[in-house]
Length: 157
Image 1 (cartoon, helix red, strand yellow):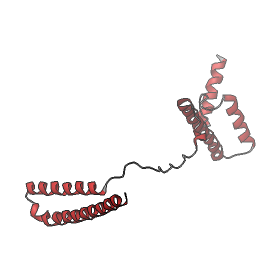
Image 2 (spheres, helix red, strand yellow):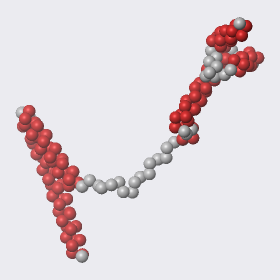
Image 3 (cartoon, helix red, strand yellow):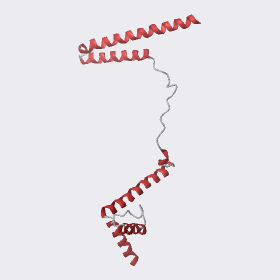
Image 4 (cartoon, helix red, strand yellow):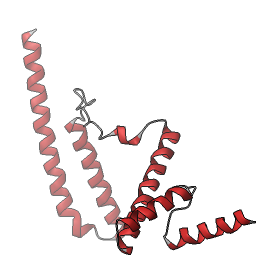
């Protein structure tokens, strides 16, 4: 019965000093030792609360670190920053500009057809046809350059 009374008094004192729970932080003896040291150093109540709160935060941080170690098997503090990605020498097949232009022209034709179905084609027809003609000119330039390069390649062989 005496041990239960002493346990209740420790619990009450722990609540009063806002000491972390024993499972999360320190044993009752350690908390008592900390309180005695704070009294001897004549800390104010605010300073004492600050110290106890700091202990709680440090213990919470340690808990998260240990949870991470158990979950991943690695210490997150050792992870550090990720190395910057190494640029790839061969980014893959480059999209052909000619094919892009074909897709853009198809998109514009579909847009114009959609506007026709809504009865608003007159508003957009001039703009869309101008864009399509621009794309066609660019395609002709690309075609001309490709054919010249092909002729040069055939002439050298």
